[in-house]
Image (cartoon, rainbow, N blue to C red):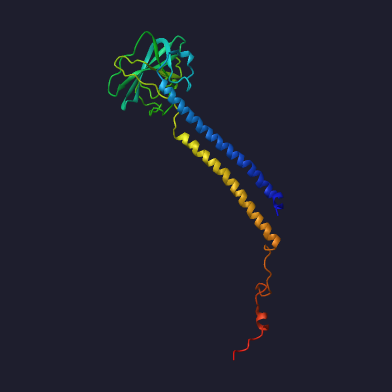
Length: 278
């Protein structure tokens, strides 16, 4: 009855099933791992946010490059003030305004962007600071395009930046800039202190739940492959049983086309007439 399993057709079906199910399980497990990583990253980011701006300051060079572990930690840096810019369309405590960002050139030659503070929209930014200074603040990773709601493309007035990153400053200043920035612990000149932000890409955003949805889809695919295999197997078994019982053979037909066992014209003529009822 099960000899059909040795046919080339069923060899192909079985090989496909044996490869498809482990592949679907692997992909589902991988997507689940991605979701768990995002949950863990979100949890770590919340812990770092609670500790941001606290503890002893660490030299800036010991915290670079910025990672999820170093983002939000207090950094100490020495240098000389250079250029200053403003970063519009920034919100603080539910109000729209702008950041005042100055570049601090370190002894190594590179500059580190420093958010000196925040001002409401319409106010005038204070003059750029000058001279050497030692500054402490919370280290932040460079922003990506669109993360602040402002495009990194051109169109902004001179002296303004769309995002805080080395890429947005490369054509504006004649020196190298660290791919990070610092928000100062204490704002001066009437500015308001900007609290540190959580690292980008560590929240439970839509991508995290997409990973969870993909996990379910891959496991459903694995179950569907197994279901179809059992369905094909059951159908082949039924066909094999019908063949053993001869039920798969077509019924023989009489010359006039009527099946055997049913009266044709000749049988109708040969059949004796019934006597009429008295």
